[in-house]
Structure formats: structure tokens, C-alpha cells
Image 1 (cartoon, rainbow, N blue to C red):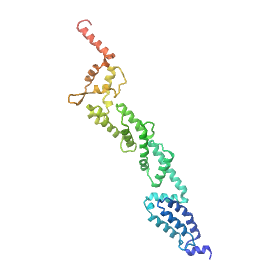
Image 2 (tube, helix red, strand yellow; image 1 turned 90 degrees about the vertical axis):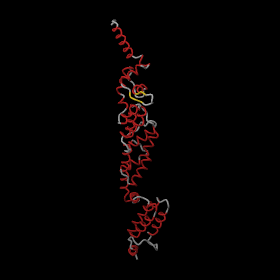
Image 3 (cartoon, rainbow, N blue to C red; image 1 turned 135 degrees about the vertical axis):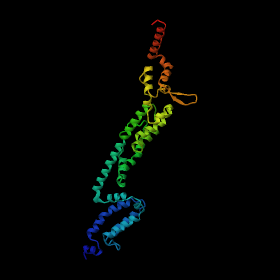
Image 4 (cartoon, rainbow, N blue to C red; image 1 turned 30 degrees about the horizontal axis):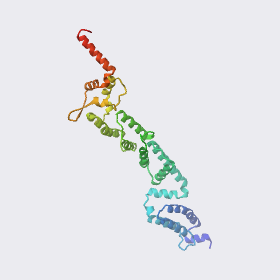
Amino acid sequence: MSEKDEDKEKGMTKDERQRLKDEYAGIFMIADNDPSGELMTVAKEYRRRLKKNEPDAFKNADDAADFWQNALFDNEYWSGQSVAEQTAETNEADPSLAGEVEDQKNDVSTNVESAARNIGINLDPARMAEITDQAWREGWNEQQIRDNLRADADGLLAESLDNSGFGGSLGRYAADLSEWSARNGFAIDQSDADRMLSSVAFGEKTYEQVQQELRQSYMVGAFPAWSDMINAGMDIYDLASPYRSVAQRMLGRGNITMTDPVMKEMMMTQGEDGSFKQRALWEAERYIRNTDEWQGTDDAAETYAKGMSAVSAMFGFG
């Protein structure tokens, strides 16, 4: 009896047997990933039973497929994976799908790189390969890719002393937050800044929500007399505009910022009961005239000159 006739008698053609032999390299690849070693034992048994002279050789291709699928079904490692992970591992083990798998991974890599760039993260090659492989195996969508880049972004923020030099949304919001807080006269605690920038970059909060939190935690404490307006969403920089103009005119300097002690003093006064109230602009002007700095200004000289002129005119010397 010829070999071909023997194959037919066993129910498996020579071509079918060769195809299964070609495929078991993929089976061994899957089995090698099982930490328990159970699938490797099954894979070796599978290879043995492909031999036609074994007493318990597979009768046909379906018999071989059932043997391997049942082993997978009973295996803890395999059954613990998602359908996407099982599909990815199966496709990766199939030589005929090598080109398709490579194209899929390239597409995922492009998506990961784009998401990282938009956030402001520079991934090193090893991390890029790691997250791309995981994203491909688990079938991540765009949001899942972003979510899984969160730890990388938080790590960059934690490493930076001033949150400068970032690109993407992290860089944009970091620059805006730094400029806004400086204009309003307060420095944000680094851990607060890291947490808030991460929240905005990953869509947990809007930039406006973060600003309002900072108004309430920083501005209200520094300017309690203005708490109602600050809590309503106004910046102390804008509220201080008329006071700043008065201070700059009377003191003759244009560099007065919200960190200048004169701003707090001229905008608020504290009563005997410890409560703060806003100063009216005329009271703010009177406060400045009582400072030592004002005494040496052009505004003081002009004010005194006008006063002397008025007195002289009153007594008929003008």
C-alpha cells in the first residue's frame, strides 16, 4: 500500500499532514508563552500525534484541531486572556498572517506616537515598543491609548522642577498656568501643578475648572476681602486694576505686580475683630500718601507744591 493510500485510510491526506506540521511552529510559539508549561507539554504531544506511524495519530485535520482547541480551553493562561489577546496571539503565531500583523502593529504604533505627541510625551524606543505591543494585543482604542500614557505623563511632570519644556497639551497648559498664576501674584505648589496639569491634559477637568480651584485655594486666602468676587470667577489681577493704576501713578513706577506688598495693603484693611474689608479707592490713595516711599516721589512733590500754592493764594500771596 502506498503512503498516499495509507493517509486516505487514516482519513488524512499527505497535504493535510504537511500543513499541520507547518502550523505547529505557531502552536509551539503560543505554548512557549504559558508560564505553567502545560501548553508546551500538549504541543509536544500534538507534534508526536502528527506522525502517521503513532498508534494514536490524528485521524484527520479536524481531530488535530479539536485536540489543540480543547487544550487551550482547559488552560488557565489562555482562558484568562481576552478575546482580543487570544486573537492577537493566534494571528502572530500564523506565518501566513505575518504581513497583516506587521501592518496592524505599524498602525497602532502610529496611533500611540500621535497620542503621545499631542499630550507632550517623548517615548523612548523601548517604551514605545512595549506600549505598542500591549495596545495591539489588547485592541486599545484611542482613549485607552491615552489613558495608558497617563503614567508616562505623570512621571515627566514629577521629574520637572518647573513644568517647562513640554510640548503638546501639557506644554500649552503648563505655560498658560504659569503665566496666569504669576500675573495673579501666587506660585502654585509643584505637586498641585502636576496634579492639575495631568487632569486637564487627560480630560478629567477643564482648564477653567482648574483655574477656579486655584482662585479658591490661593487668591481667596491672600485677598479675603475680595472672596465673593473671586469665588464668582474673577481674577484678583483684574479686580486690582484700578488700585494698580493708582499705585503706579502715585509711586511713579510701572512695575507693580500682585506680589508687591503695597497691593494687599491698599486693597484691604483689617478691622479690630480680625475681619477684612475692601478699601475704597480714596482710602487707598490716602494709605499710599502715608508711606515712606511716596514721600520721595514726584507725585508727593507736586501735591505739596499745590498745597503751598493754595495756602499762598489764601493769604493773598498768589
